[in-house]
Amino acid sequence: QITLTQQAESLWVSPGEKVSITCRASQSLLYTDGKHYLSWYQQRPGQTTKALIYHASIRTDGVPTRFIGSGSGTEFTLSIEDVQPEDIALYYCLQTLKKPYTFGAGTKLELK
Amino acid sequence: QVQLKETGPGLVQPTQTLSITCTVSGFSLTSYYMQWVRQTPGKGLEWMGFIRSGGSTEYNSEFKSRLSISRDTSKNQVFLKMNSLKTEDTGVYYCARDNNWYFDFWGPGTMVTVSS
Image (tube, rainbow over all chains, first blue to last red; front, side):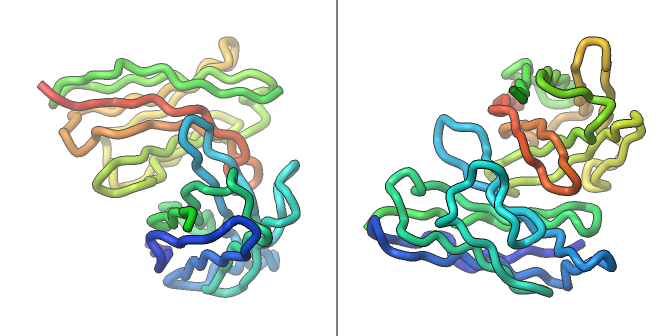
């Protein structure tokens, strides 16, 4: 199965800063259609899990433009520019290229 | 608007069977795949399986033959059944809508505790 590694368990950030969360896959997530099957999710206490990014770089409807997905092959990054207090949450990557689909272990964004 | 909600038993005894219902609104189950995901203290988020818009299913082999996913389109409900429960199955169980290989809407999850 494909392993997704989110190196950082926690990242500390101050409001207004930029932060990057990385996700490394054990094999390329590029399919023959030219798309990467890597998506990003946000979990905040008391709220439903929210999809932020799909196909590595496409924002889902309504997601603020400060959330930016990038990367290719096996290395992917979720960047949050101008971090807001409501961005304090857990962030997970998910690969849906091959079954079993797998998630990263998650990165917790915390306030300095 | 799109909504999903899981309903489960809360507490299940070891070796017993877990049954969870996901009730959806705002879309048709015949148009989307529906996924099941769980979150446990030991393994984090785990993909369990899905039911296609046409009704066929696929499962994570991790759950071997313990898992079954089905649906009732007339009631807008998707069902998860898993037998031979162990304490390690304690966690939060989610249903999610699959929108071309990303999970665009999730339910709030239902907490399941496996304990005697």
